[in-house]
Length: 178
Ligand code: FES
Image 1 (cartoon, rainbow, N blue to C red):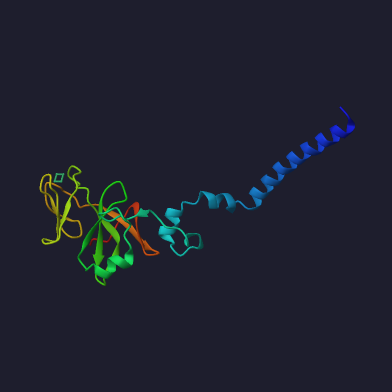
Image 2: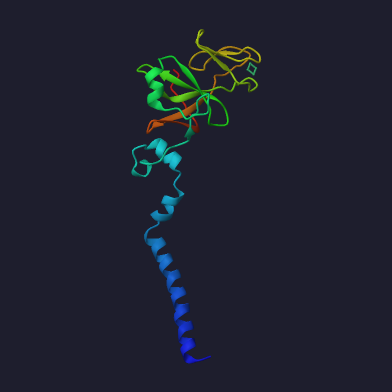
């Protein structure tokens, strides 16, 4: 092997070693780089929606109306009234958006899955309650059970309204029901 070739090879090997050392040094000096990649934005942005990392982040999935179009918050609020329950698809199970006084879209939706045996409950706007078509369980407008055989409330789903979008987040919501 010519000395020129050896020198080139040596320079190349030292470049590789140097690169590795540089990478290790950078990782050591700025561990936040890898930490930032590991951050669960869903978790972070639900807790700290005004964090700089969350500026452009939309959590969850779009809530879809009965024609599979994404709900638009302004459009909902131009027609909805407090007490309305709007069916929303998007997650694996149907849920109902809750319209509060204002009107405003509540930060939770009511799951349509009956806790008895899993049928999908219907919202009866006249009686202001959810009724299960399978065995007749009934739930009030907040999802609390009012008639069996179901023995527990409908579960709640987290809702985030951002940039005129209504997002369903597959994450339990625990309200103060006291
Ligand atoms: S599945 Fe709803 S009452 Fe049985």
